[in-house]
Every structure is written in structure tokens, then in C-alpha cells.
Image (cartoon, rainbow, N blue to C red; front, side, top):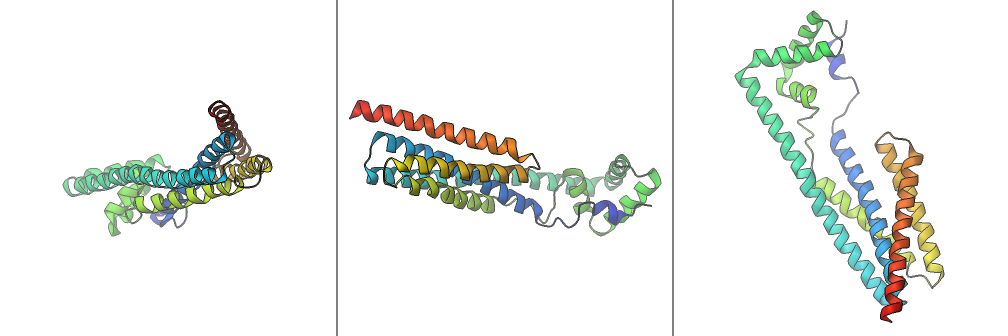
Length: 238
């Protein structure tokens, strides 16, 4: 016989897991964007001019603007998700107060859909809701842990910091002596994108190779295009 504790605890202790995964996701995406966007900008500027102070200014501006933009975007996006989660919890609280029997029947049906017999499902539903009925319904119906509602500040900070770290790599390598700086930057960026591609695949439980290939090819293509545009503009303006 399957107990209520076994049904609730299918995947082990997940307290705080949602927010940790959200920070990791924001961190990986932030680092990836920092690498690609900053590499594209500094490559384009370096293709147009050999003035290292100008390249540095452009790179620093790209880092600061990009980090703040990523943080703001992540905050707005995750805040919307948080508002939706809180609204679902409040709606469920209202339904439990207004029609507890109907909600218990609904929970029983959900447990039956998971493979429990009607009698066991009813017994499990009663036991599971005896301690904290709102928590049980929020987790099973919506996958929401009421103690781990999405935190937009954590995601925003993670995105901003990771973007800055990712942007530093092409910013520093492009300041090396020419023409080596172009090759060093391209190799360093490709390796960094391979790492973030592998990390994103691991977070999504996907195969690493396709994610790494897409990341590296996309980033190198972006650098090549901006370098070409910068070189063409530099030649014409100069």
C-alpha cells in the first residue's frame, strides 16, 4: 500500500529547489549573453579602430549597460511569475475555505490519476491535507511550494553578476596586442560558450553536444559579423 508520505515525497527534499534552479538558469543565461554581446561589440570596435582606449570604453559601456539591462529584464520577468504563483495560492485558499469537500474530491481524483486505487487515494488525500491543506493542494495542483515562491531579486542579481563576469572575458582579451587579440578572443569566447552551453544542457537535462555546438557556432558567427561590419565601417570612415 502506498502511504501519503510516499506520494508527497516522490522526489526527495525539494525545499528551496525552485529558487536555486531559477538563480542557476539566470546565471547561465546571463553569462552567455555577457560573453556574446560584449564580444560582438568589442570585436566590431576593434575591427574599426586600433585605439585601445576607445575599445576599452566601448567594452565597459557594453558591460555596464548589458548587466543592468539583464538584471531589470530578469526582475520584471520573474516578478510576473511570482505574482502569478501568489495569485494561484490565494485562489486556492479561497476555494478551500468555500468548498473544502469539492477540493478534497479533486485531490482524490488527482491521486487516482497517479495510480492509486479509489480507497487508497481517498485515505491518502485525507492524511495529506490533515496537517497543511493549502500546502498540499498548492504543491500537487500547481507544483508550487508556498515557502519557496519565486524570488525576483535573486534571479536579477544572479543575472547581473554572471553577465558582468562573462563580459569581462572578451573585454580583457581584446585589449591584447594586435593581431593576436582577435584570435585569442575568438578562442577564449568559443571555450566559454562551450562551457555555458554544457551548463544549460545539464540544467535542462538535455544532451550537451547539440547545446554546446549551437552556442559556439552562434557566438562565433556573431563575432565574425560584427568584426566584418566594424572593419568595413572603419575603412570607409577612415
